[in-house]
Image (tube, rainbow, N blue to C red; front, side, top):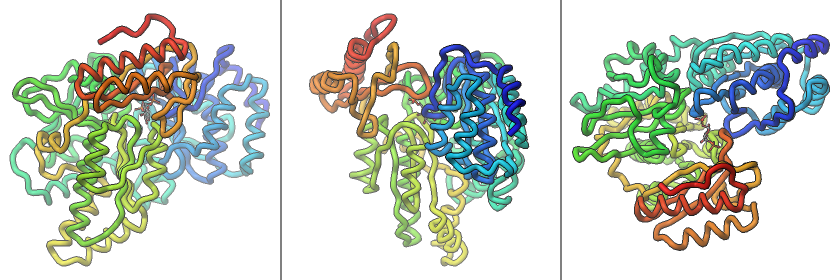
Amino acid sequence: MDLDAITKHSTSHAKPNGLVLQYGTAGFRTKAEHLDHIMFRMGLLAVLRSKHTKSTIGVMVTASHNPEEDNGVKLVDPLGEMLAPSWEEHATCLANVEEQDIQRVLIDISEKEAVNLQQDAFIVIGRDTRPSSEKLSQSVIDGVTVLGGQFHDYGLLTTPQLHYMVYCRNTSGQYGKATLEEYYQKHSKAFVELTKQISCSGDEYRTLKVDCANGIGALKLKEMEDYFSQGLSVHLFNDGTRGKLNHLCGADFVKSHQKPPEGMEMKSNERCCSFDGDADRIVYYYQDADGHFHLIDGDKIATLISSFLKELLLEIGESLNIGVIQTAYANGSSTRYLEEVMKVPVYCTKTGVKHLHHKAQEFDIGVYFEANGHGTVLFSKAAEMKIRQLAKELEDNKRKAAKILENIIAILALKGLTVQQWDALYMDIPNRQLKVKVADRQVISTTDAERQAVTPPGLQEAINGLVKKYRLSRAFVRPSGTEDVVRVYAEADSQENADRLAHEVSLAVFQLAGGIGERPQPG
Ligand code: G16
């Protein structure tokens, strides 16, 4: 390690006095102007992680669903997964030390993790379209180079694309080349193949309106459009040419306000969807003939996919085990439907893709989705090999099902239901999400996959008392890991009651957990 160079460079990426940040739900997130030192230091840490794993490590500069003024960074581990928890702790430690202690912390991490400092390091970097992202990714590069790491800067990428690049580079091309062209080809091929096999007629399956949250999704979808031109025609809205990133649009807005984004023309029964700012969430929706808005969120996506997979497995006579992973935000109706109607085991983890992903790895086929639209399906290596084998061996009618399964490994598509039939699988329990500002959100700690508050004293008792007043009700609170707020979630038998319960719980948080600013107002 060239300690002098580290000292020299770190002074040009000074840490604001007194600023303490934590590696949260999806890395570091805060106002962009407070992140320069974090980016530089995460460049340093990525090099150590790369040397330690002897693999390429990814760094994504994005604050995803957060407002345009924010930014953030997360590290991507060798198999395209989120950073290992022990290294999250190193990240938080390195982010918060004073400049003169950076070298000591780097040496401590290297010693603790037995990092071979002579090992080469390679880092790939991607960024979203925020005005601050380019400069911040330069600070990452500064950190990488000062520790002697090599790098490839992909520039503008969606978060899933960066994860894909990391995985490709670490699997010696077995999964594909780490280029955008290959990414588009691979995904569109599976999709087009799949749409050929599913006999659905009419345009309704081939057109989709997409709200791109004024973010990177618009650029990348435009690039991808030609690759799947036979299978799907997409109409882009909020493509960043006018509006502000995530402002009154995007998946987070649509999900939490339960209404369409601004800037999208919706005719009745048209299929529409929204990405978030880095295009790693998707929620679907439509407006019925009476003008009512219907949201098809991550819970419904998980239900569709797992029921589809179960049918296919039944068809080919395979008994691979499927598990569905949700978080506390999953609508109560979705959990009941999955367990009681579909008879698949459902597990609840803490918020954050990393937690769901980890649990999903325990199954032959692990389907995980957060209600907000993040998710995927994991096939164990053994399950994948079995399916590929079956796709070759089985007699014709069964082979078709196995072939579909094989393509599904790369991409997921609908099973020929209309969006309305999909929506009608079960009825959501009315629900409401709110945010409360408190002086220090860490005063709230939780247990039971974030469904119960442990501190501050009295808060859980207060929530229990409020929940009892309503039918079919449930509520919980938790500190956000991406925004400086406490999140409140409530369900009840009517929208009015869900709104009321969420408001009453917000007031309890405000009173018992040190609320600041204006008291939460009803509706
Ligand atoms: C990130 C995480 C998600 C999480 C969301 C909200 O999403 O990747 O797993 O659900 O934040 O987290 P919290 O409630 O802790 O703020 P994104 O799309 O912003 O990367």
